[in-house]
Image (cartoon, rainbow, N blue to C red; front, side, top):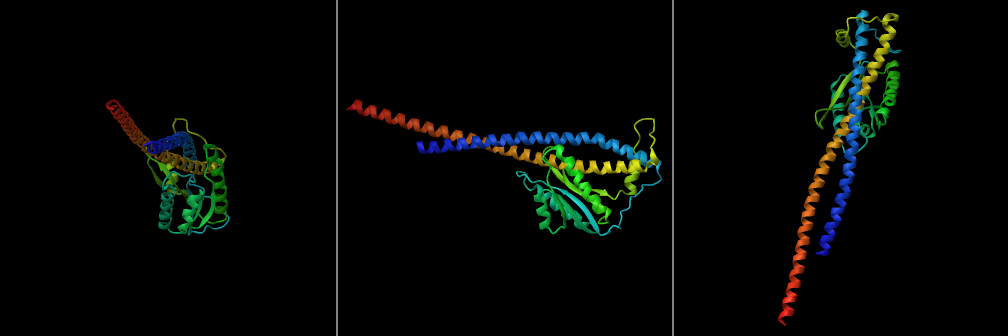
Length: 294
């Protein structure tokens, strides 16, 4: 009996330690989800401001000025940015977004060339035979997103200026209700007439219409750079929010399973101990009866 109760005691201690680790990771994931969701929410107001500025510029100009690269773009090349993750406990997160990107890019006319954010999704894309242009580290906080987006913009603009591509797509996970998420894609370039008309139709929030200075071209180019910046920033923040929401859901399931296991172990331990106590009492009573009879 002692060996069995000792074994159950060790299992209870191990399960308790594991539950402490799981709960700590759950708290960390919940805090991380909060900061990324707040950043996405705060970005909405900035996005609205940029779109209003673009609409004002388009209303004052007859057409969207298309900055031409130094060399003609190869029409058969597609640039893409795929956001993945390097930490564990998120299931098939990288596989899902990588498979979605591969399927979408193969359906488009042209040859894809991809920047990967995260070593795991980089390896998954390489296994799928997708040509890779580079690898970026996954940011560990909201503050680290801005430098990452700056690096992506510098490299993508340098290649676009050389005429390496004219189309640019971004792939990432987008959070949904609860702990759900889904892979999504967005075409960032080229900025076509339909996109321009959509922003032109955005109404100015006041009766005092704005005036665009310097002929509008310089201001328009600045707004376009900001539009591309917050599009990449939002994609990265939504990806990180989806990752931590997935990890939070996994930790909640693990915490529930460990709680059920602890209840089962406690029940077995108490039954076994009570059984041992009953046996010892029976032995004492039997011995007493034997002594009394003699």
